[in-house]
Amino acid sequence: MRAVNTENALPYLPFARPTIDDTMVAALADTLRSLWITSGPQVLALEQALSDYHGGRPVRVFSSATAALEVALLTAGIGPGAEVIMPAQTFFSCANAITRTGARPVFVDVDPVTRNMDLDLACAAITPRTRALMPTHFAGLPLPMDALYALARAHGLRVIEDAALAIGSRWNGKRIGSFGDMASFSFHPNKNITTIEGGALVFDNDVEARRAEQFRFHGIVRLPDGTRDVVVPGGKYNLPDVNARLGLLQLARLEEFIARRQQLVARYFEQLQTAPPCTLPARGDSGHSWNFFAPLLPLDRLKSTRKQIMDTLAARGIGTGISYEAVHLTTQYRTLGYQEGDFPHAERIARETLTLPLYPTLQEADVDRVCNTLRQVLWEARS
Ligand SMILES: *Cc1c(COP(=O)(O)O)cnc(C)c1O
Image (cartoon, rainbow, N blue to C red; front, side):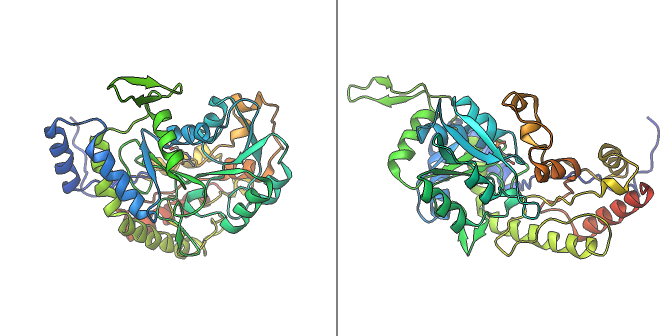
């Protein structure tokens, strides 16, 4: 092997990284040794802990937030003939979950500053077939919840909050999920806490929580004679106990993780507001849990493409991501008749967005390095 000088090489900074401590590793070994490894006591404990965290509301955990969103829709009785309104700028999960129930996603543009679904446009998109709103709390920044629920109430719509990025976020001091209709959280490794893969639904009543359990696991109900019946064509969306055990220890550190994210984002704002010419995300208030930090690149003033900028940053040790592409312009959703120009804000964000490294174990010096490197790369790419 060729000798390389790794002494001075700066570590590669991915754009997201889970925090897994020794206690978590030991607990997972413990759970494996118990030989109860799929859904069992740890799942019940995680559901209880998440319920406590959300003001005592019923919670069920799932194999992913994508599964949770699908189950939320099924539990609300949404299927063929129904329309569900969602933002054109979010992760693909929402549109796919709606489509898989037989319902139709109806996209609306996002607010260019908050990048959350524009509620006036959502209102204008309501038809007699509309059954639900499925907005995403973008990057962890809550929607204006009073306006969202006023709109839903005025039209008799369910609300399924895609809170994949927003566990621990607060609106007016209240945790997302601790009020409202249904909220779905993700525990993917890039999210605020992780169970490797996993998700959760918070409900406002026990009847729907129990119904969701059926959709989660084969549609099974247990009969008094000890046999099982199937009452709906349920999926296989349960979370294993090994994952749930990790979730319990992650949840215990969530507030600390969020505080750290907020500190690092403050550093990003400090470093980047003097640096032209990126468009920085909305700052929000202390209720923003900052799952990711994604400025928009000034591509019309650069001779490089975003891909070239990303490759150059990667070569200099900075990982970046795209959060997200415009859902309506994917091959699947163009089949509904959507095309370029339908949602200008979503399309601009999709074109220009660049997710920078942000995770609790990142250091202030790392943020400075990311900002200096980005500044340098943008300077080199100016047209
Ligand atoms: C990650 C994510 C999801 C899906 O979460 P999974 O747990 O990976 O299924 C849904 N919506 C948004 C906005 C996300 O970022």
